[in-house]
Amino acid sequence: MARTTAEGLTVSDLSVPADGSRSVRSLLARHVRRTLEILLSLPTDGLDSTTALTFVRTRAVVQRAVKDPAAARRVQQMVHRVVLSGPIHAAYRCLLNQETRGAYPERMATLVPELLAQMSIAGLLPGEGIFWPAAVDAVAWVPAGVVLRLPDDAEGVHFSPYALQIRGGSSDGQNISFDSGAEMPSSGVTVDRSFSVVSGRMFLSTHDTNPLSDFEAHPDKEGNSIDLSDRPASEWVDSLKQSLDFIEKGLPELRAEMEIVMQQWIPVGYEPERHLSASYQEAIGQAYLTLHPNTFTMMEAMVHEFQHNKVNALLNLDPLLENAFFPLFSSPVRPDPRPLHGVLLAVHAFLPVAELYFRLEDAGVAEVNRPDVKRRIQQIVEGNHAGVDVLRENAEWTPTGAAFFAQLDALDTAHTTRMGL
Image (tube, rainbow, N blue to C red; front, side, top):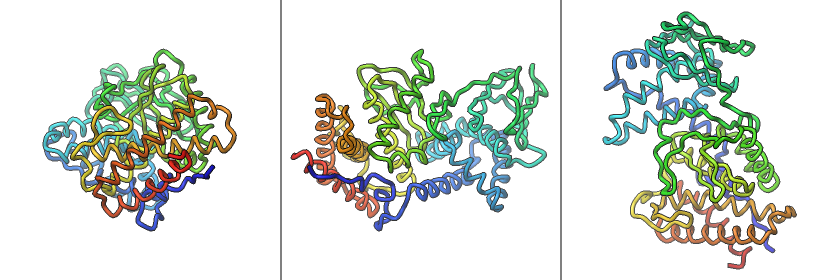
């Protein structure tokens, strides 16, 4: 049986320029730079005076910080973290469409205190700090694995390097330290253990700062509300770990990329009969998924959504299709007609799933030989091939997209040859 390859699975192979030299790290570095550019260019037009003045002052601090090499590194790490980068890109997206511009002030009123909190945690604020004269619902302290829920009656928060102070209300004057050895607050603030380690800096997270999470494109799904379905976080984590173990056995290069890219898996319920998942172009490093009793189903979902994250990071930088969103075509994995953008995302997501199954088969993993798994592999390969045909016949590629598709086409050919299709 012909041996397939993993060529085309990695960002370095799929993400061009045409010589295929871009690695996943360099792709993310470009994405971080783009995120920072967006943050520094967000306008104050239409914002209330408090949000506008605080943002201008905070932005000036960021602009000074990026001129200092040591501080610039911390800025890059901060804007890479999806709890901040997601709101930055979501605010920016409002400006690209006249119909959504009305949401921009609300998104900025949420983004500015989130930015202040993350700058405080990173030690990037000036010594005198910056005051936010309004309530702050929560502060995501990711390195400590917690979310701090601040009192509802607080009238404002003063953010300073590695600390904040609550102003007004029942906890007036309470200080919270973000130093690595600091004790968690014992009163006034609720401490939620919202981040459970899956692997390295990859977490199961029950905290989501993505304001677009309720916008759902899948016809069988309504939004992405956080839901553990009365199951302990440890059960979710165990399922994700078991899936990662299979990915490591079959595609260790892709598994290594996941460690670099993926930050948060958001639980959105238990589905014993089917699996649902989602990713957003604005929230690179994050995916939503349901829990399923079949480890292979979870494995597929993790690879699928990881691939979406990679291509979404690329799409934030370079277009792939000239006719991405019109007209609509049949999709190999969705019941509803999809634009070529959606077909491309589906093929890019499921080609490595097929490759993973073939690699596990070659490695002698017994579970792959079950009849139901064999049927699933054939279904995926046939669906991928149908999607590649749709793209081959109808896509109008950009130069970046043409190089991208060449890798997909080659991998599809290897898979159909192996299956004798």
